[in-house]
View (cartoon, rainbow, N blue to C red):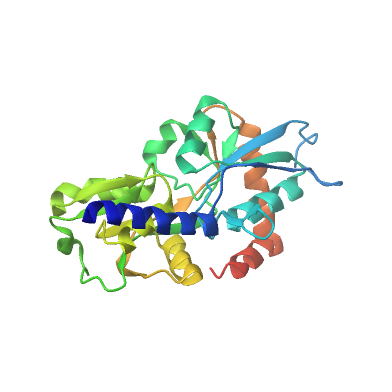
Length: 268
């Protein structure tokens, strides 16, 4: 009975967070502005399909008022497309689904706070890094857990296909805990707050934003783990011109101060 009540509570809290941070994937077409340049001989005529996450604030999340996805990744991509003069259609489908879509050829690229790491280089070509972040452990606000050693005999939440999942599974045997996998961050946070899982591992910027913006009953503990860069990605061997466009646009935005304005906008 207690387990059933806890499950119902988890689903209720998760639903509230999902409404606040995400919704089902949709597409927004962003046209190339007049006067845009590619840095090459011509503006691409193709409209690229770009996949992304649904609930990874402040990088991508649903603005309830406008019913559009906003965030650092969304603004950065729009600014780069404007600078380089290419068209794209956004598909916010979730991180795991975005990875699958790119590999299956259903999307041309993805931007979703995706960490550039060696294992992914076998399947993806990445842009230059556009943001640096690392993992951190998050627990309920009243939790007594302070260190990895405190996780012994407990379960830990992680989001599928993410760096947090990779890190959690890599140390699970060493510290004696089991990993529970979730498809999205709001459900993972709800599991921690409801005491179903003792902790979760998430990108520091993302979980701190969620705690502050949604007044979550959570806190982060310990130090940032293994900081790495986020990258824009395509399936390996495809769309090299899109990587070039992204890199040139990113370089221009950093040179003209627009990148710094975006960083300031999101409190980085």
